Length: 478
Image 1 (cartoon, rainbow, N blue to C red):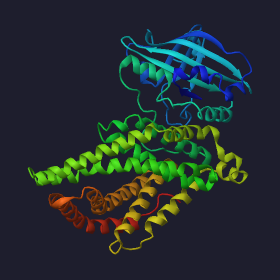
Image 2 (image 1 turned 90 degrees about the vertical axis):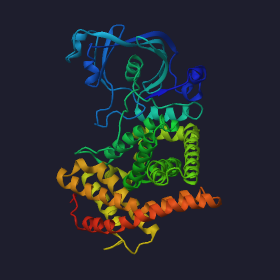
Image 3 (image 1 turned 30 degrees about the vertical axis):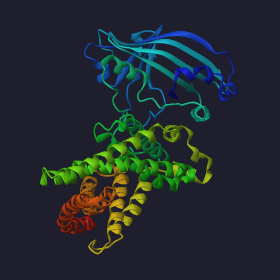
Image 4 (image 1 turned 120 degrees about the horizontal axis):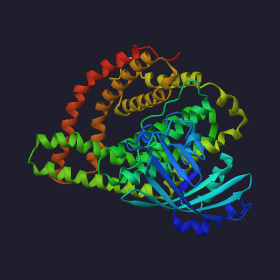
């Protein structure tokens, strides 16, 4: 396991009770220098690898996950090969090599019970023209035991999940370009995976996405980080009930903190969407109207307040605990203490996915032949169920035939868009209620609600057409 830590915490950390209770040797300190090499055209980096040189040792490692689910968050980069000389790496190494980045500092190491080891790297990452402090805690041993130790240390220290591996951070210093996201978009369960493997892949992937965008969301420079983070949180919230049938109550502790995080992100996202879409359209239609300009200025202030709330939430201990627990989940695997879960978790994911999809599809189709008579709340519930079905389908698409899967998702997305347009009126009404006050404001909010109502009326017929097509289509799973 690997974590970013504050160098100021090192004296206390090496003497912390969870460490002392496991130590089986002295803490040794040595100097450490790692130099990463690549070709002049960055051929190794382009192929997703890094080549590090330490005294008497060359190590070839991965730079980023490759989609196979074998590099969970909070774990060091997978080792591809190591040798005392380049010729022993048994892989093609481009030539000539040039140094591109380096780490220099101290390495502190101590043995722990169970043939485990604690290592601290404390120093500086250097490029040609810049440098950056780096301090990492590494725990090597039985993954569950090390995850348990990390959880104990996190009670008194901030163990941050690294945004990238040490080599990728070094390359970032050298290039001046932020590390690429470890993962993006949705998780995909590969063919042949077991239910337990599917669970770990989905959680690891979405945890990485959430952690990446959490670094960028508070700034509010563009709406994209909050949008992407919110979608990842919603996907993870959708995954929990899917896998709870296999993992039992082990996933329950994530429900409330994820719901709270989703609400905080959702408030900012609602104002982003309003200002970019409806607000912009109304502002254009009423160009120069001071009442509309005042409303939009008030909406922008609400947006800034919502982003301030995001910054507060992501800096709070609660989010750090959530991030750590998500990152450690694939290593801790707390569901293994439930003997009743073992058989289901070891079973192939494909039939399990088919049953989950059946349940989710049933929830979507529950209203029957028409949506016209549904209340706003009931129609919104259909939209939420459609999103949950889509997220579930996206997780498991690699397990089924591509063409029918693609056709099903296209019609499902069309249904979501139609229902989204129908939901705009309710969303706008909620937002405008937060901006109420005075005759001028009443005029401006009335203009917004009238604009949205006109759009909703046009969308109603489209929704019925899309609903009918969706109900008639075949499933892509057995």
